[in-house]
Image (cartoon, rainbow, N blue to C red; front, top):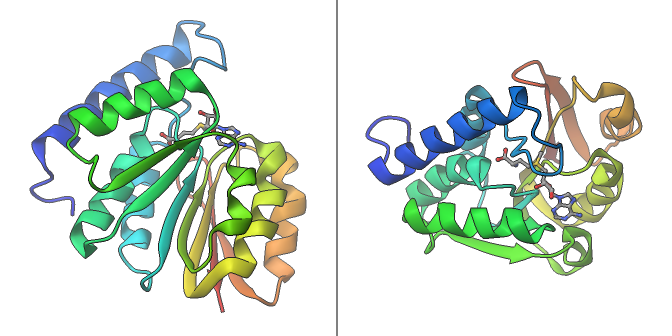
Length: 196
Ligand SMILES: C[S@@+](CC[C@H](N)C(=O)[O-])C[C@H]1O[C@@H](n2cnc3c(N)ncnc32)[C@H](O)[C@@H]1O
């Protein structure tokens, strides 16, 4: 996946990395910032997404589509598709542009709206990347886990830098007998839950 990456994907990733790095230091408001995962987390989620059984792939929190591009590498390799949810119109507009210029519109379906209203209808989930406002992680976890296939992965970002805010969900997952869970200290911390 990481060798001979399609050039349009690599170019758009670099462009978004440049915007994200600039946003973090120039005072751009939180609402407008990309707040995307670091590249090492992108690689981790791509490897994990390439390792799950068949089923539906979803992402909660698209922003400009940077993490989705990493996930699209796994989908491309396996001949699968991913649906990604973004609540903000401006972010969804940027993400649509990302998927167009990166040439992944046939792999990625972008849905604008509150992901929580779609989750109960999505069955047979084999991969879920959760990277939205921290207040909704708990509700998303409870909606996604019952609808996952055995061997599927729910992966949530910010498990270390937002540890306090996410502690209820992290504690819940660590003692939840439906999953095997652990926190991986990469990037800002990634919670990985594998459905039993
Ligand atoms: C941390 S950013 C996502 C970064 C992206 N995953 C990446 O690494 O490139 C969080 C995004 O989640 C979106 N979001 C927040 N709550 C949401 C919800 N209920 N449904 C869908 N998107 C949501 C925000 O608008 C924001 O763009």
